[in-house]
Image (cartoon, rainbow, N blue to C red; front, side, top):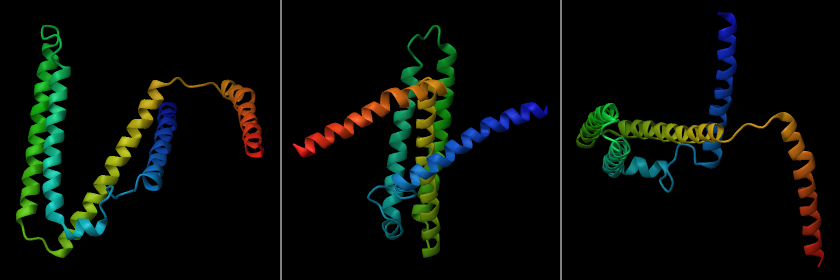
Length: 181
């Protein structure tokens, strides 16, 4: 039992490092918790506009997702009968989740919100934005790791010393020659 736990912790540490790297990338390069072209002050001053935009965007996203799920699970209807049932079930769950979120957003929109509630809603939205960006970067890491093969250490050493170092020196030399000429 101890060795299997140590093995699991070793690989979980790798994902913790990946998550920490993704959080740094999101914070430094992708705007952290802000949406592009939308400041915190704009969210606080116009909560109703943001709620309506979110409702429309969620409905469109859910519609496109459900259409994609159904389209990719109906290629061969005789063989994929079980997949069609699963696709219908998943589409039903997405629809119910969307309805629940839309009802919550309509309730928030129609209720009279105090300034504290607006600021709290803005903070929750910004945390959700950060988490969505973090999820996207983590998925990008996973896709790259599962797509490309891993190199052995000696292959990386060979690549660095025998290919990249001469290319870098040639780049410096050619750049110097172009500048001098």
